[in-house]
Length: 88
Image 1 (tube, rainbow, N blue to C red):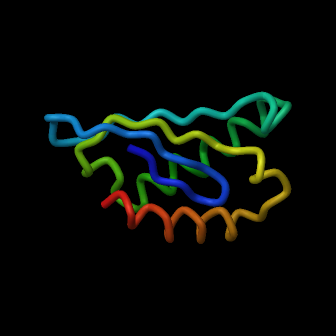
Image 2: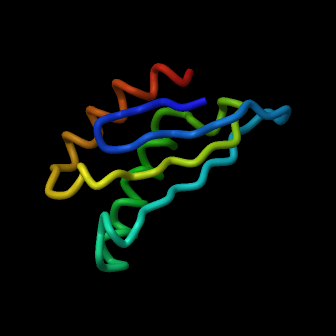
């Protein structure tokens, strides 16, 4: 199953535990330097914690797409908030 946003998509499957296991994948094609990839990873980790994604019983991967290049943090946050509702 997949949830699509403008800057990311989440591939997930339900699991039998009480919490989520989430990975975040960012290709070098999206962000060339490790510093930028880690910054994006921190943004999405914080958003997942803020929206209590850990309480949803899924195993999933958040894949960041190339369309995120040059976008502001607020724009990323707004896109995540709109699309995460499809998952919960």
